[in-house]
Image (cartoon, rainbow, N blue to C red; front, side):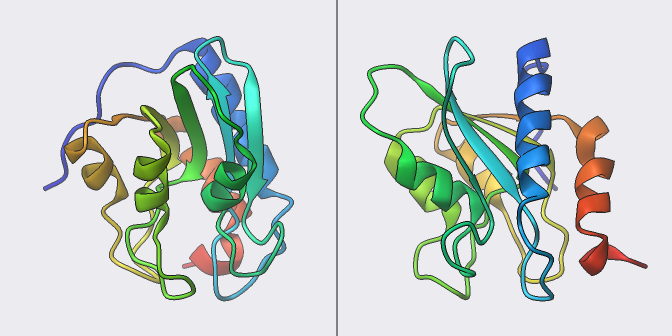
Length: 154
């Protein structure tokens, strides 16, 4: 059983998550990974960094790409990602949930939990266990499924 996520999304959450989903369209479709978009924003909603799967290397995840661009900040930072951050990774030693926790991200907003295709992901539960506020906006999940139709077709 999964833990419930906290709080209700704001209008800004919906706008920034939609922008992250739109970023995922830049990820070339591949049989080995999802097309994911991510962005980091400060408490005012100002975008600090963006990333998408495969942006700099085919093995780079969206969250990893965005976090690599994040400079020092004295504000709490939220991550908006189209798909649940990974907890298991075949292509690199450190999964995205560990990178998020190490970066001190305090809030994660996502549209879709990772389908059970490549790994058994527990990103939401892992983040929440470590005190990260997690908000899901499942009404945007179909957009993520459509972008990843190359993998998620029935």
